[in-house]
Image (cartoon, rainbow, N blue to C red):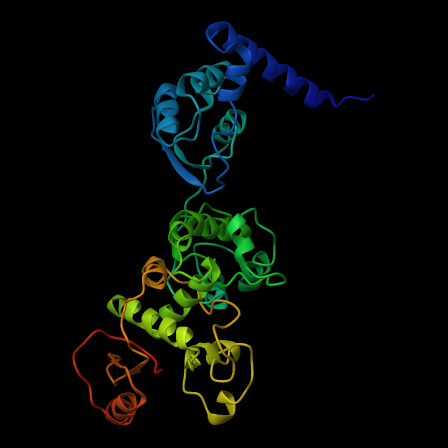
Length: 357
């Protein structure tokens, strides 16, 4: 059997280092315990920024890595890093590490040149995947085309919540969490997507794991995505969510322009009668129930409203010329409000909203 000499040399080096650490820490669990402590402390691939100041010691760096939970055991890592000869090779700068890295990988990254930091990129709440792609493609923070980002969304990712989607549904809409991200130089589209999915795992999943009775987490996410498009003011979010659930409960069509627009590949504007008659899966005038996928990528506020909707009897809302929403229970009340607010310049104080239901 042929053996790769470089791998053999590297394996011997690691073995010698482990032996040296074992000699120092030979109490309790012994070698197996030390080896375990040098493993990855977690599975998250979300990059964590680590900044090493000029003159900072290896001891200080190890302590910081321990605080950030990027290593299992500060003392074991410190002993390993010393044996690996990291101290004289430490350079001031910013590094991006993650919890899925072993001590060996951490040392390897810290031995390399620090990452260059460019401007942060902000992806606001309520954008579609294509709108996010446009922002990324035009950003000076990264050199990633819109098409590259969209292509990255077609790849597989190891996040269990993606299994919420119905069989055959591969849409990533709704899961690309909006946030401001600090990115290393030469960041890839997949790295950005992974950051967004990691954010979703930490900030959205805990909320969506407790959807309203009778609904799945994915259905609640769809509701949140609609709320994000229908209301401009956070105060309206629970009320709009309540209207959606009230209609679903009695089997009433949602009749939402925002879903129709999404089905036509549009992000705004007035719809013609011909467009309203187009029977896409997202036309909630022609199809009962929720659309098949989210229509945007909602933030925490909209997701919170979708799992904790306001308890009202409202079935309708209409927006005035200032964007304020006005709610009603009956069709008669709603028609009066439509005449008052949609076809005039009438405007009343109140929480701002957007479209008409």
